[in-house]
Image (cartoon, rainbow, N blue to C red; front, side, top):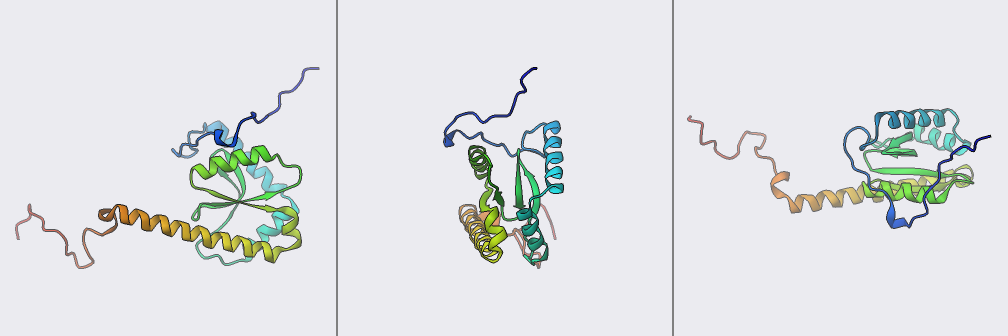
Amino acid sequence: MTERKTLKVRDTTDADAPELEKKGRGWKISDKRLDVLHDQARDMKRHASDAHKALAARFAKADLGRYTFKRFAVVGSAIVDFNCHNLGMAIAIDEEGADEKLARRRDKSLESVGVRVMHIKAADILENMDEVLARITAGMRLRIGDRGDARRRHDAEHPRQTTPRYDRDGNGPSRSYRKD
């Protein structure tokens, strides 16, 4: 019989993670590969673990305002367990037997495009749900603060982009081409 090829992670350092380029629907990923990722995510939703189902049920009941977590979301070339696009935050549920090298590479690639990954053990979700939710909300608050700091830094560096050209009454710079 012939031997089947399996997907393996190259033996590299953490600093050697591939760079993602955020362009278009799939960050320079072919449509065929992106369709495979979405099919895989759909299959993962159908056959979710108990920890994943429990956390998804709590997220469905929780009122998080404009922040929602999408289950088994495709982000770039990775599938994360939960993703909040508004916060740029992903939650990875660490099941026993998962490949740590692959997870580190994925996390490094996601961090390079601004997505923070929070790891939570599956056993913790099943045993201490309230503690896990407190950790997630603390992570959300931290991420909201980070985004606010980045916005303020951007506003300070680019003041012309942040002030409106005209106020609500229509007052603004004079238009020299207009004769009243």
